[in-house]
Length: 274
Length: 274
Image (cartoon, rainbow over all chains, first blue to last red; front, side, top):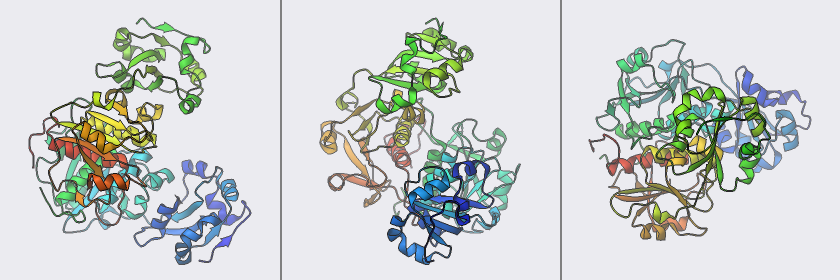
């Protein structure tokens, strides 16, 4: 759309951008905020799972995003950085913002290919936005079909989670489980083999073949996955060295996703299975 | 040492804890700050590379750390959280702080085993404390012998870097290169085979055997390693899926460290090479 210049911080068209940090805490009723050029391109690009409601650019950022602005079906507003900062309530440095619309939440069944190879990441009780964002980034890098989150995990469309995901939260399909949903019953229903990652597991990642249809489950760094779940699932640990037995949960997800994606042959140009 | 209770925020023995955030920016002249129980145990434990100058605990944290306090050769101070907060200048929640002493900076040569298997992580131009901390955590998890940092990389003993490293920065030997030092000349001197990780490399990680003595080099996420370096080193990329070609630099380090550590047989209980 043809960009329109706004100069009044109180312009109602800027209201979704207002008081940004306070709204991070209380939620945005079906909207989310996208920051930065890379992430905006993903929101407006062909792989995006979401529609933009509007885009807000500092005028000096328009030349570099002219084609995206032209092709954007949503309104594109231009405002000087001081106006942007007055609206959001904190200094805006990069001058690239957008509001996305969540739309309908999909069911897990809608996201997992019904047959053939499948790689799904399941996040249980991840309440840290950095970890959820980083897990999405890894899921996108290794071509996971979807991410499933339990009811306790935090929102992948939280502003910081999107930023840490490098925009992966906008293109990697995800769905949320209902409170109390059973991961293994879900895996059965989706015809996925559950792999529960746990530092205490007996089987080591890489010691035995990995399934063609995998649901890779990770819990929080402290308590990890529930014992009841671990007792019923095939569980794997990432072997480490010495006595510093500590990996960040998103890093552990990255290492395991890499191993499963490689075993499934989904890595670009990777021809040599050893 | 027998703990001593301090009640005056202006007590000179508390001065190294004062104005903590301001001092994060200007530096601490040979000191660093440790926060939290896990990290304190590493500072005071047998694998620590550093001496504590003092420990500062909220009284309610003493029972859980009684043995560490007893064995600690440095003074242990007790202060209520409001006193701790008044000293540091921000609310102290966990009630566990310590000051460490940097000591003499080692030379790279002192940290790398002169023969036998070796795994060294080299960080070039990493200016983000989260990434440096996370890289140390991965280096410790996979048993790297040392981390080397170029002059442009940030300080692993910065308060946030230690925290993100889960204390790995206190136990993993590290050294800093002089400005302008050449990584490949250093690798030669240490008899290490340099492996430069780069998204544009022709060789894929896992497609060919990995060296028994490895210097794994990573650059920043944006520009990456210098072209001049990549042109002279064996360079590797982590294969990814589809067109989301983006891994966090510390996650990339984790995946590559895992692969090299596994090939070198340094992972605990990992018997099955496939």
